[in-house]
Length: 109
Image (cartoon, rainbow, N blue to C red):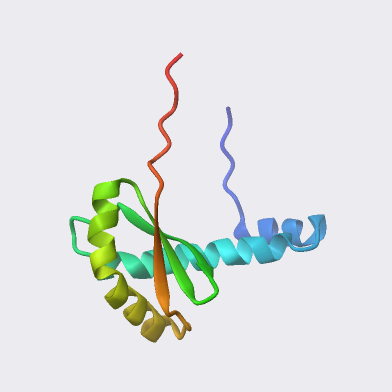
């Protein structure tokens, strides 16, 4: 299978033409990815790579972690993370919700 390099600008223009709302979805995805990148250095080294921003909704920062053990640690840090991301990003966040989302493991055949 050939791999092609994606031109982000061309992809964005294509998505704009394909349907109403698609560009907004891509923009939102990019925002969540940027927030995940900003979150990473705020976490202790042991948590880095195990926690990411999954959503922003109604002043709630939704974080996804890959195990219940990490969820317990993030719950303890959540108030400080919400405060710091709010301050750094100019967001209006008041609470945090944590979801456990194990990494996808492909099935063996």
